[in-house]
Length: 209
Image (tube, rainbow, N blue to C red; front, side, top):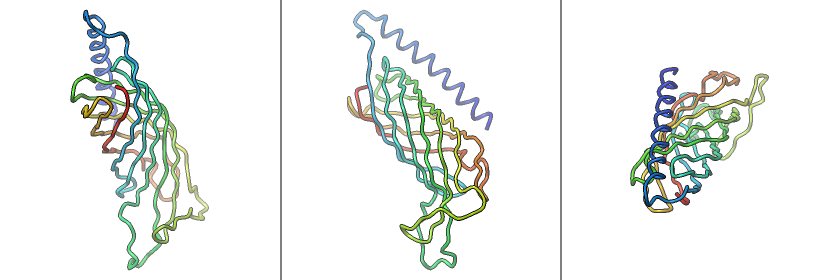
């Protein structure tokens, strides 16, 4: 895990330097524009593994873009690890799932944002909550009555890398790979690192880039 974190930090540092260099080159050219200010809103649909189960992760971001090279804004995501559905013929209909969400601020260095295909490195810093719910069947969830914690709060840092394509002046699509680093989770019969792991997704951005 430390090696993964080091790789993300190194990649982020390199891309910030590259983005700054590109921005300087743009400002120094004879016909360059004045400093650019843009914005975007996006939504993400993704897949992850949470507590050994397939999980759906969805959410969105809103950001301001400075000089085509750095975006800063707010992000929020929700998750649930019950993608397999229900089968009434199961012997044990009582099932436990984990659901919750997290959000916070993020900074996103962008390398080559004016190119048709480029990369971005958003990093989210925030807080979240997770709850243990029990399911009796389709559409029926409730919190378990246990003497142990049923929900918990956590801190999260989620660095990501995105391969992004400019499909139109106002629309971009990106393949996203991120890793969730969280504080320990305290829930009944759940590992403290249950939320730490990779997230694969598709992100769709709309705005002025």
